[in-house]
Length: 179
Image: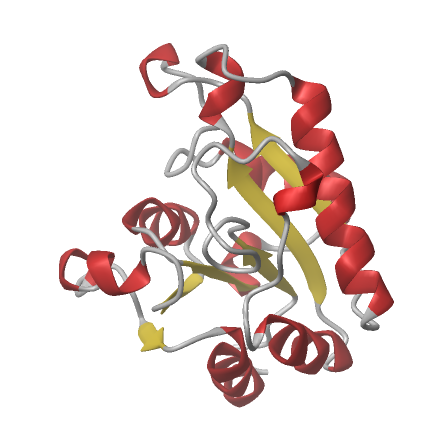
């Protein structure tokens, strides 16, 4: 297959899912996240985060809060030797009908424009059905992690997830087999 990029959900996949997270003090890496991301990075793959942040569109917090939380996540990862190639987010509420809210392909299109990879040679990793449907929409391989809401979404993802694993460390083993 020849994987070029890993497209990761943020909340529930890399960091703990804190309902409408808007304070960087609440950013905490999930167990297995650093180890898994290190393994994927060691393969020379681009790592990009794609995250829906509807709290902005709902008026719960502003985009500066999203940037602050994303920066904190990147700092925690960097301190552990993991560098992200990009973080892309949708600030819209679900009813906005935008093209960037997962499972729509807009965030992948943004990442492709900035990072230059073939989405069919990407792996989408997340804990929700929207992540798996996004991967399907762009022709990527999909991995559902059971962290966050993954266990809750597992049954409805049986046709959209290519693989189901416990965490990012287990996802890294799948990615290594695809590389």
